[in-house]
Amino acid sequence: QRIHKTYDNNLFKNASGPKNILDNNANSFVVLNKNLQEIIIETSKPVTVNRFVIQEAIATHGERVEKHAFDAWVDDKWKEIVTSTNIGYKRILRFPEVTSNKFKFRVLESRFYPAISNITAHYYKIHPPELSIERNFEGMVTIKPKKHNFRWKPHGEDASANINVGLKIRYTTDGSKPNKTSELYTKEFFYPMGEIKAIPLIHDENGPVASHIFGSVKKDWKLLSVDSEKSRHGASNAFDGFKNSYWQSYPNKNNKHYISIDLGKEYKLIGFSYTPQKEHAGGMIEKGIIKISKDGKKWQTLEEFTFGNLINDPETRRHNFKNSVETRYIRIESKVIAGGKNTAAIAELDFY
Image 1 (cartoon, helix red, strand yellow):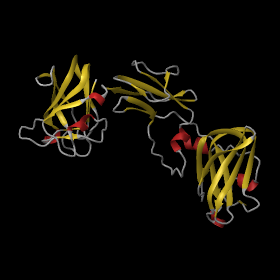
Image 2 (cartoon, one colour):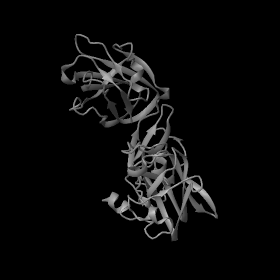
Image 3 (tube, helix red, strand yellow):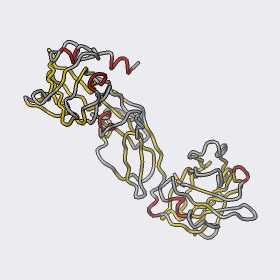
């Protein structure tokens, strides 16, 4: 529906310019040559566009354009707004919106003289994207649009930048829902622990609220002890800030595995999250025990936890403690490994 709404409305419908290019007829065309290497199209009043559709007369002349550009008359001069490569039967150009009443198509490189059959202009209403909130090992937070897997070939276009032009991001760190007056995100910032919520805005239209709860910053964490670790999957991978790396233990007879961590200082904690590795179905901790220590040597049980359906859904799981606890030293012990496996694995641990 959005595609039809965009491309059924040709903003060059009543424009002035070469008739054979504006008549929406694939059988009519204009042949460019050494004396005619550009096409100027004018509208009776300014129009706002962010899409051009161009077609070559390939049935009669084949594909000849190798590189081309579009300009718009802005502030009493021509401004290049987009360049691209070959055209062929049809090329859709996507670019940040521009408002003008005069546009120019230029062929920059071609194989002999090209024949252009149609040029149309359109406006696609951009909707705010989903956001990603991430924090690095040092505690610096970035908020940005989620990476989009475009179904078209970009051909050198910065597709994400084109789609998200005019985007503003507002965020909160106090648990409240962000709005148009919330803090404006302009650059990465340090955030020690807690929840960040953010919304994208384009032309004052709100997008979906994104949120992420961050545990304590991991740069000061240290490994205290571990029952075992494979050479390629060392224990420090369990808190290195990368979900693609992970700790994995060796099998043992009693199938009990543990990892003990020094958080660097005492924190008041209300829970933890466990991210399993996704390379294989082994090592997923289905049931376990949380232990704490005053000195990192003598351990006492805080409580047990259970995470179900890990093999079918190996996403991050969170466990909230029955009561908050203040500690610097913490240990995760496995009781049951999903699928009856006999090693433990952790991609990432976070404590809140």
